[in-house]
Image 1 (cartoon, rainbow, N blue to C red):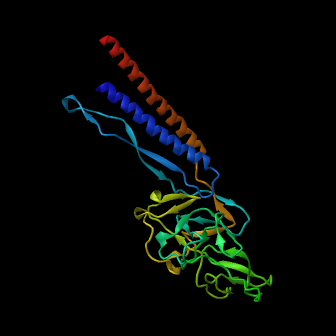
Image 2 (image 1 turned 90 degrees about the vertical axis):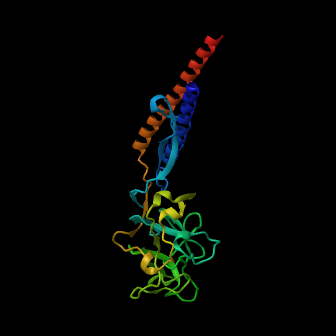
Image 3 (image 1 turned 45 degrees about the horizontal axis):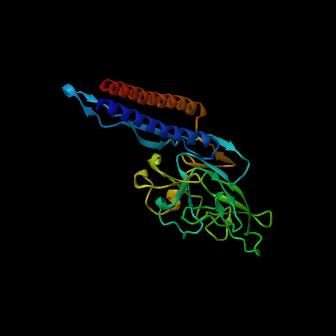
Length: 291
């Protein structure tokens, strides 16, 4: 029975270390992915068997959790005004283009740290996959171009302030206006806009669910507010949470650390494999004695 237990213990080590290598490989493959957050594996021992004199013998290891590390990545200057990064722990809020607007509550928005945005043919601020960036009312950031109002019609974004206020150049090539609300006429820069670029916080971001494309979905334990978007709650405060234009947040993967982890995990995998080989040899010796 003990030989069989040793075999299963070795197998558990193979499986858990193989999963750890998958996480490490994913980190390394995303070293150049904008806004990517590296993952880490957490192991736990399995239920132990009781032995003589109330002693316990372990039965192997298991992968307990894979958590993302949300440390700040470095800012890479791009020179593109719609490339945005966040200094702080907040996320940009997005929605799928074919879903209804506004997004009713913050926890229903898609979250990302990857701020490579641009204005599409419909004058909507989107990410490279076409997901729409939300303002502080939960609506997509959409500009207006009627073709007949050169002092207010949208031409291009020229500035994004740390507090999320967006300034655009009108089609007359001279006038600058604030983005005011989704699909609405802009207002003079002497006024106060009704909406700005939205950010969303999560008190426990490590448990956010990855959905691909550098996007996350909220889960109840992530601590994303369940209330509606509001200008007061969702605009960057320009101090602890501020938007940085003309820059993107790089991946926070530490290549040196990942290679060290890879070597250690590979050695643990090899050791588990050796445990199985040795146990098999012992089994063969026992069977030889029987013969």
